[in-house]
Image (cartoon, rainbow, N blue to C red; front, side):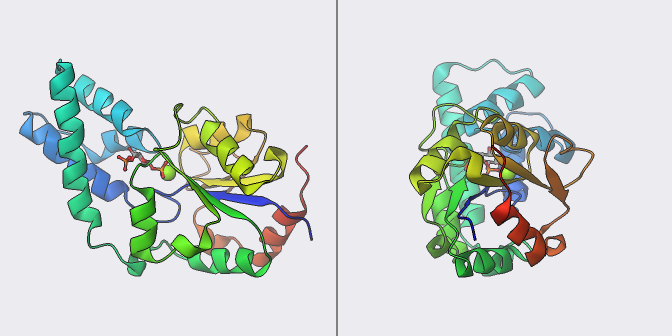
Length: 221
Ligand code: B16
Ligand code: MG
């Protein structure tokens, strides 16, 4: 069996932290005197913290000084950390553990490729950290998705050619990043939204071992 590099996004793929990001951004918006809806939160998926705040301030039509901007970034994160403080294994999305177990059983290299600067503590809290051979997150990249940097670094750290990597992603920007890295892109979510992906599954319960075996043998190059 071939060795592939399997790269997982975090938020929306392994755990649903989007709901906590939403609550923290909503609190900041409300403190600043405007509303922030669940629908608007969709734009924040896979997007860096800094870019999220820029979009939020656009929504609220607020002009910030650099000092205010930095303060609000910190405030949002302090609030978000309170939500993730109590996370445990019950928050792992359905069948993620089964897929990770199967890939480990087949000795496949596994990486995390996330925009979040809080990725490591979250993986620790839900007990999945030992599965990952390397973690590439918001602390290691300079260019946000759809730039492929995060996935290219992950491939390099796994010691696997980028054409031999498979990416699991829930965000359009993440699928675009995987595609421009020359990797196999697997969307987790809705087909209509993630139509640029090579394959799309609503969640990991829909992905059987036969498909995982196929991924291990596909040549994208
Ligand atoms: P943090 P992913 C992303 O995670 C989230 O989808 C996005 O909403 C968030 O703004 C970003 O991480 C940064 O997160 O504030 O914790 O550094 O989907 O790339 O795993
Ligand atoms: Mg995501």
